[in-house]
Amino acid sequence: MQIAFALYPRFTALDIVGPFQTLAELPGMEGRWVAAERGPVTDHTGLLSINATHTFDETSAPDVIVVPGGMADRDIDPATDPVVAWIRAVHPTTTWTTSVCTGAIYLAHAGVLDGLDATTHWTAYDRLAALGACPTEQRVVEQGKVITGAGVSAGIDMGLTLAARIAGDDIAKAIQLAIEYDPQPPFDCGAPSKVTPEFLAFVNAVMGG
Image 1: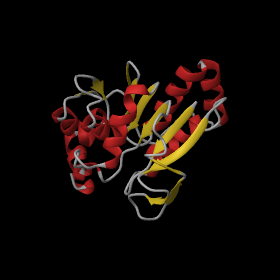
Image 2 (image 1 turned 180 degrees about the vertical axis):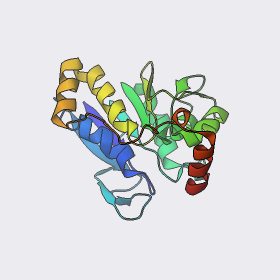
Image 3 (image 1 turned 30 degrees about the vertical axis):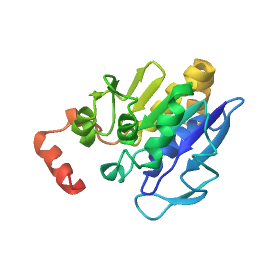
Image 4 (image 1 turned 90 degrees about the horizontal axis):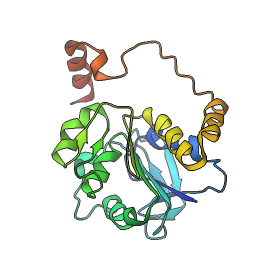
């Protein structure tokens, strides 16, 4: 099974590394990092790069695609964007089409989420709705062969969900234990519904929203 992990300039690292860590050692898995061109692709901080081993053109029939979010989704021109074009080309034959965070915006531009429930980073709900999807605060949303994960850290949850669909619950549970994924955050403020409007406004201001 070929799993293609998409990269593009200004992606968010945990969006894609989280699901990669949960899927990398599935039995029979061929993983590849894909981008418009081979070579290093730099994340949104400018401090981390991941090497694309294959181009989108070289990855024309993946079984699974994982599309991360980042800081480039506001600048998408769906007529020319290479990520959107690749999603449009491969989605009809994928077994699973997935995204994390604002990777859902790319899926929506490609027409994958039309009329579907989907999740993304909470700051992007309105944009996702404007593109024809039905946003929800759920951590992971499954709609047929399309799975979307909420913001950043939700990529681990999405990856474990996908691992269970591919290889069964026991394998997914084994992966969860192996990576010691047992979240116990110091604060209960990981979703907009869990904070006050004032704190939400503060975070929006900090993020430039």
